[in-house]
Length: 383
Image (cartoon, rainbow, N blue to C red; front, side):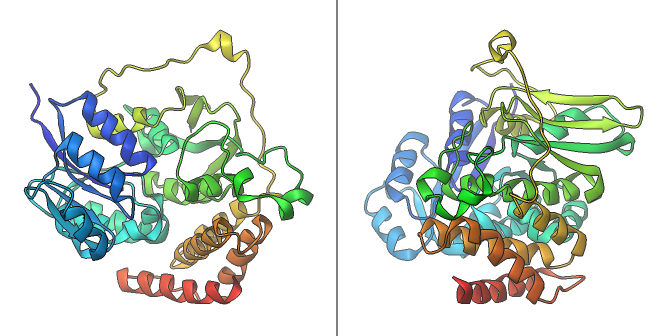
């Protein structure tokens, strides 16, 4: 019987967090949900506490923490804020950290977890986007495993299993195309939040769903893939695949291509990150190829979905440029969700931020944090 691993889930009330808890529920002899964290949804967090009996939880601010303390057993420690996140991921009773916070907020606790030699199951792609050089250096320095939960990067990891990575010549990231794949660009000014939140294949949080609609999510994944697998931008390709059955592909020096296929179910890459390098059984739907009838592929329309090229540009610029890209995107997406700007304005805000902010070429953590802060202030003046 394998030793049971204690897991801290950063963002347990989000889509990835809830799927992670399902994986843990299905393998109680292998995993325990030791710490859970949430931003504002303390009602769902309370339910999770009663089901999974963690040792502690963290919420975003002390007022909510005080409310939750009155609603859960006194044996459950309730912490708050960014410091609370760092405290739980650095404890000796944590083996694995699932980092599924949304946006820049995931950076600091992920760095702390690496420095305390935890296995990182990473769904917070922004951590690698804004600080890829720093994170990869820390992973090497502390000898930890950083394993992707994103379906696309998990697919690449699975395709590379047993292969000499130096023989990989191209990474091919697939994208569903989002809800506006066939929507004319002329209509973007009138698209509503409700339109943008209807993803054709995946159930995700609001922010990542909007990123999927703009194709920024795929741009962020290109940057993430660069840091995870060491290939330059010109060898990372994005292909529209509306059926979302092929999750990504790897081409090798002889022209062979390996693809990882499966139904759109985030529990598969989550369990793979937790069980790696082993592969464990899982119940659930399977691909029915006759029912599919066909799988299709297209070049992304880069003129219509400008965010994709903006991400490639930021990766090319390097330094703090990806942090600038990410901060401006988070601000613009938030403004769109609050109905303060139109959908078509999202790339405009990002492009302005990239063009007007000086890039620091070799940033440390404080440089990255400061770049993020400055861009958020600047973007606020545009919204």
